[in-house]
Image (cartoon, rainbow, N blue to C red; front, side, top):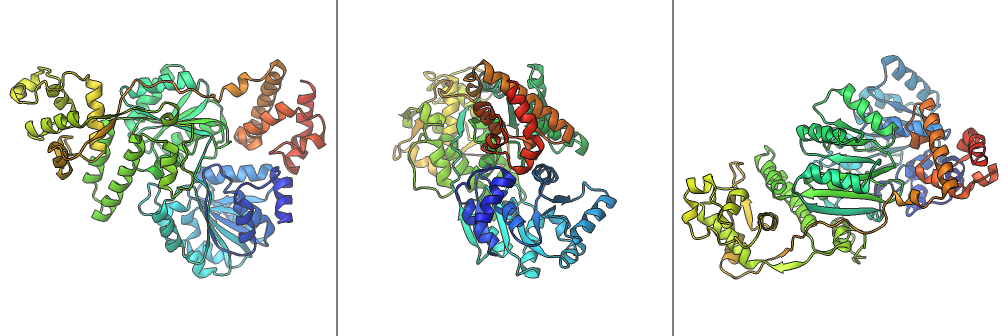
Length: 599
């Protein structure tokens, strides 16, 4: 491990290992198989990159996305590590050159797509060369229940069958207990050691608010909390992606779109813009994001309810990878619940799949409706129950909701569903409860039923919250025809008969949460420090452009902040800055000293 620590310092520029990194590296370097679960930004890549440099041969890294492979290789080239990619982005001539170099032993790491790896040609090629290890990144893609399922991943057990002496490491940031079992079973990792780090990302603040006008709420959030910051906004539909992007651009924000309906070239251009430039907002469907390694994403916003906690955790985990403060913000309403349940019911999937999807949705709804710490609920889902203390950095902790006995109001709502024939959605039911003589109410003579006007004491917003919560709690369901009509189920009976009380969250106007904002870090800089910061950022941007890589590949913001704070004047002082290894010191040391001495 002294060699591993030396590589960490000299090559990667970090002074010490974090969490379980040292243990994982020692186990893999000594030839052991392992499954590693670490949160996004937890340093998973080092767990196989350092053993790749310690062991003889080339490390074969299986990765699902071209952009991820290219960014990883670009970052490795910057620190002097011999790495290459082999995927469909290469021309036939380029691929042939990579294969030739591979056989000549010129690489420490080779990143390859699973489709390429599984070809007979590639498998035969690597039987003729020494292999240090196999790393299977984004291993949750093997799970047929996950939103990132890739069929090719389920065939990667061939590595164990054909190269039984080569150690393997499977890595993911997103896996509940069932997914972990599936990864182990499908990849043949039965005797592998399992390393599970905490899923907690304390720098991320979780906030879920009632949906009223999602785009207006998003604008308010970005303008108040993240002006000029890079962020990701997730929408369920392609149309909503395009409309939201146009809205942000109309309000002076630098936003681009990404969804599967766009042509490949346009998607790639927008992704490159997001990765290489600062302050870009990416508006996307879940087609975007897996493996995105941009460290300075300051917020992830959801305008629609994710299908599962795994999906939500992975998407929000793209914020604050640099360890600095970031926000995970979401608007959520009754329509989201109805839409997600309808999608499950209308799916052509097998019954077992629908049951799993329904369970995952229920867990997601429970997170949304919780009256206790969101972080504790999130960690509990992934099996972390040891520390259940409130985090103090989620909306529930910072602005605790009140809970009220809503049994009578829920009985009124359920009765109204029954009296109107279980054929109407929440909007019409609220009109009946509040005594609104709309054309539709009169058309169906619902002004003559006993529940007409019995809820006029509550505003429409309160009734919408009640319906949303009782649907989320499983006291109502939606019709199987997909029209959004609310219907009673067996669980409704006990409430209607007064045998069960119902306590709900009291809906209040969302308050801006107190607490330190990311922008405050810059606000704390004095005039000289701010000047150094701007000079360093301009130099980094220019250098990144010259090298054709994103700015963070040159240096992360955290390294720039440390340079501003320490203001090193010599090479020896530069060595003490986190993120500056021997190669970067050699390449950029003189430039940095010149900038800092001039400030």
